[in-house]
Amino acid sequence: MPKIFLVAQQAEAIREWVGKVDLVVAEYYGKLSFPEIGSFDVLVSTPEAFRMRQKTKEGLRWSSICLLVFDEVHHVLKDDPYRKIALDLKRHRSVGSLGTEVQIVGLTAMLTYAVTPAKIKASKERLCQELAIEAMPNINHKGGPTERWLPRWSGRTNRGQGSS
Image (cartoon, rainbow, N blue to C red):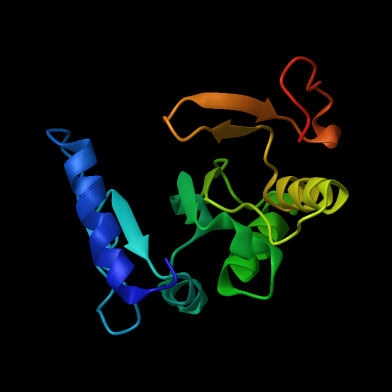
């Protein structure tokens, strides 16, 4: 989360969402001490604090992460800490040093800054390739799925599901 105040807001929303499930949600950004490894199940962090923590000797290792959520995932497409995180994950995937596969969930209300259909499609392709996204469901304003866009490199087809 790019804004520090959103860390607390999102962490509280996750705590409410998981409800009675016994999951510990921790918060982290630059001015907070990093919670002890093993003391949390979910970490909500600003992207820059996450990156800086990964660079420390006792940092977060990709092998200890099973799910990574990018809120405002469209930031991966520009020069942003999200992009640096995504490219670092891609680099680790390419050398096979992850151990377990990190699943990615990308959330956004605005997928791209592009406005023409060709540029929108190119942005989707780039985002999918850089994050190894296999499918991109779109949700309508009522919360239901409207289409499931599949990147061309996935080898699957978009038939009957819209192609935008």
